Length: 297
Image (cartoon, rainbow, N blue to C red; front, side, top):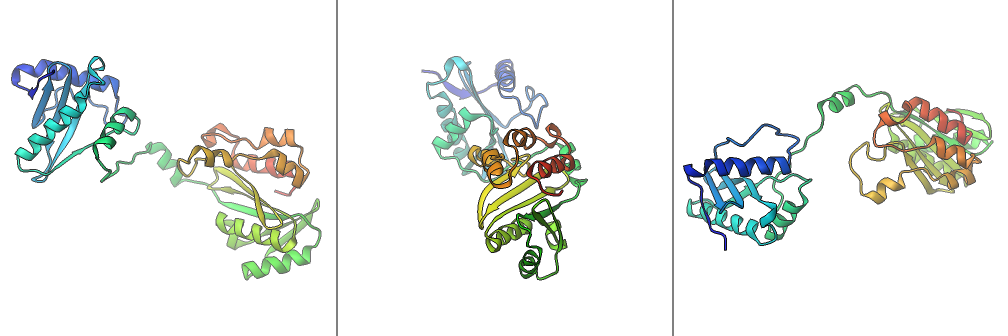
């Protein structure tokens, strides 16, 4: 059985060694400075196999700044023993809470903390500054609804009822294109207009546009039902479950059946990617998708 004990000044080299091993194994993309010489309020050692380092943050709470067990000693409950010893020290010093930070990528540590009953109190969020600056200079949001019909006047009447304003209409290639100031900067309202016009027309409608000058979205409806949705960068607005991200890819078979688009060409054009930089410029991609669908961009 390994002995868990408080570290002494004579253990400084071992503390540095274990800390350095932890930092090599679990690199922190936020705080990349070397913590090997950091001073802690209390340090526990499990022989030469594990370490727990704590800092007192308030009368009520201590922070577990470091918990590490060497690979050769894992699977024996040593991490749990170190945590319990840390909790006993915290209690003995009149505090009642033990807090810690853990990287999302450190799955093994997260499983341990979840099993012992730690719960999320605060979250640390981060993003590259370059991406944030880029979002501050984002491009325009706009879009059109395309109704598969030649009955321009019916589309005008139906759109005016939804918008409570006179829409701009243009007919051509078997479609009526609808634009409105009310929907140009509001993708959700553009989608709602497309769904309603598909219902009232009893046919196929496409809501197609560019968002923030960076991504292209379309929503395809048939007789008022949503049949396909596409976003060129599925996780542009944040992480999604794998199934949801997959669902935002274009369904070339459905698009071909309802719009007459060439399915092979549509697959080539309506691609998805992890970043707008991996696709053609949004305006160009938007025009390509419109052209293959047979609607006016």
